[in-house]
Length: 201
Image (cartoon, rainbow, N blue to C red; front, side, top):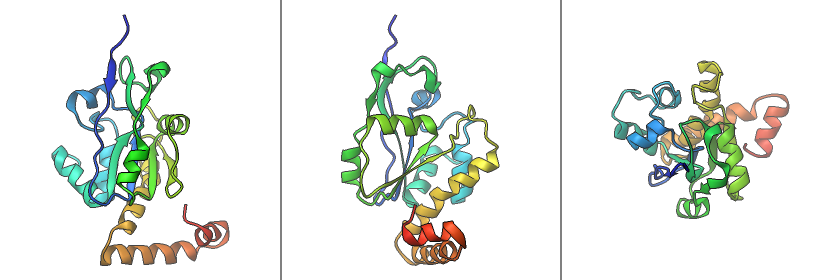
């Protein structure tokens, strides 16, 4: 028996997104709930709560509102696929339908960075979707419980999201953040400082 085609969730996006976080495809739990990162063992929401200072147990819509207010958008690489269970390895490679990122980025030109939640999302995007010249792409460690990396190490890598999102926000807070981040990075000795001065990454 052929498994049915599953369809993903719509993007979560505010007025001026600076960062787009992409997973591969929602888990079975997330599809049932109609919510991103529903698995309680997934570290996505605990990470976001520590980065943006909110209660990880807050109602789902309240958590989304915080992300939107900080210029963070959520989506997945795949629009649709066949899959048995929740594991990325169970996705049928012949059934992949990618989301329309050309249209999304045209509608949201303020997006500066795309962060992939894990290697699977990054690999799918690289194979299936075009890149935009004005956007930088980075892979972060997966927040899935199947990705065996210490929680603090994952959080340290994910701090890049908060840094870029905060720096991109308009107003005095964003200006202060950009100034401090620029001074701190440019002052670093050696290759890291040279890279920052040459081009942000």
